[in-house]
Length: 591
Image (spheres, rainbow, N blue to C red):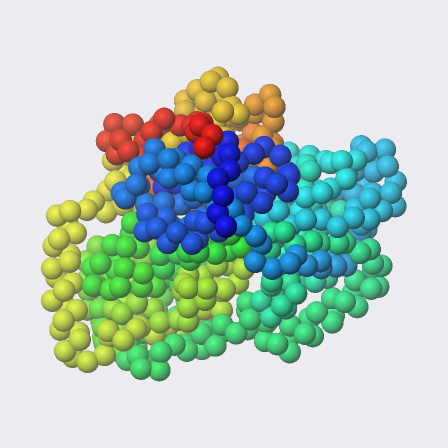
């Protein structure tokens, strides 16, 4: 039965399309229960203004449609909802034992912790394994469990600068938290051991069913036991087909709809990084499944509109160097986004308009001349299997697109059902001609906008809204943030853009209780160097986020690569007023 509760809820802006609802500031079971209740209530609402919610230790990040409900209206709506919810957990909590080999090459930070904590390795291991840990949230990546209940004698800060690579199965500590990395990834936690288990395994009901409220117990094992279990897990994964990789690998052979193999492309040279992408994977962030999808959503959408495709049809995203392709069958294509010097049969291929192609034609792309990413759409969209509701490639997890990877020489991609008969092609031709004219009248291509927003010194203005943790940064650092020029570093990818420039180091540090992250969040690790989280961003993180790039400017940022210079500009005149409410926390009265 629903009951009234005191909300004590605070709201913080997280860009122009998300809001962070904070219910507490501690790792506590009662607070986390309220978080879970609010999250379940949001799922049950099925409100068209709501897109997705991401629960964490003490907050819920809510993605919403500002064209349907303003920021202030969302604050009121969530306050009312949080005051009405309550309930019981759907099932009794379970406890899962995770074997861990501590130290040696598995725990590179254990030695430092011994010295700093004035504690032996054996004592650290004993303290870490003698209790059960509650799962407070799922996030970062699929299968990543955030655990509370760590002995306070083991509290230890994150790394000042996150590592570029942490091995799958790594067991770490960050402040009051402990957890396990399910995939190879960047990360800032202190690593003390490793488990041979595959923490993201949809075929393992014990691990796949884990959620907030369940318990984890770590069990120490020897090196020999670790390797023995690792071999056993590998055999089981091979026998089951390892859904996250092998079950989608049939797509690499050109598998798709058996009805629609009349038009497609064969990869002759794949380019630097070419993947299948769509509008993104929605609904899985609460379990750590990031949205992925096209980095430049404006150009992606434009390519599909030019061909009259479904708005979420899959396309090719070509990065830096586009490669070359043979056309299979007759159809239409559209190329948008960055200028990768595209040619069709050695003649320049016009951008931002539909173009007919026929069997045997050759498409060739060179090095990016302007921008960084181009989008190649085919009539009917690229027909690869959906995984978790999307065809988008997630390189980190290895799902979607063609076996979760970038394209390789010899890959074949078939288009969907639209491309086939002469009647269908004629209809596409008619629709494409109208779409091209309409788009030329209504929408500026991203490269034109990029040129307009880049000054004579080559610095591009990127607009943002402060929040959700801008209150951690004094005015002096905010001034530094907006007055400085930052350079996108070489250590940047679809997951995030690391920036070189003046550091932003508040006196109290930047470690926070982990909470939700958006496409465009600007987080500041302990080294003070900002990172802009991009399409393959982790779903949650534990560094303060000073601001969030507004959604209209994300396509511009996606077209900038390493070496590009940017300046952050507060969103102001010309940005919708209802999406630019004051940043910082909004305290609602208790219900």
